[in-house]
Amino acid sequence: MTLQIVQIAGALLVLTGFLAAQANLLDQRSYRYLLPNAVGEANARELLLTGRTVEADEAQQLGLVSRAFAAEEFDTRVDEIASGIAATAPIPSRYTKVALRDRGHEEFESCLQWEALAQAVTLATADLQEGIGAARQKRAPQFRGA
Image (cartoon, rainbow, N blue to C red; front, top):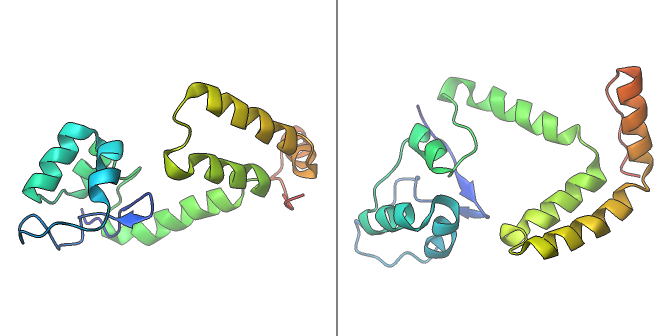
């Protein structure tokens, strides 16, 4: 199975073919910070010190990617995921992206405070009423970002 692109926190990961460890170079692409948060310290240590590449199935098992697809179905499956994301209400989606940026909330209390603020905004949107109405009428919602 071919893994085409892996992205973690905005940085392309070492699955592209250039292996800094094998070239005896100090990698300058923030992997030493990002990778332990994604795969745990032990796995990150091994990957960074050996420069070993991982196949798509292992990347998924380690948590580097949420899903792995065969090359021939890659575009179709990515389009399906993108369509699913695009069909969600825009305001809560934006809040979710902001909340998850920079590894999300480090403490539970700050997460609860953030959610309380975000819910106050999203509960007052027309999109909430549209979502409720669509669920009752068993139809796809037509969110407008309002």
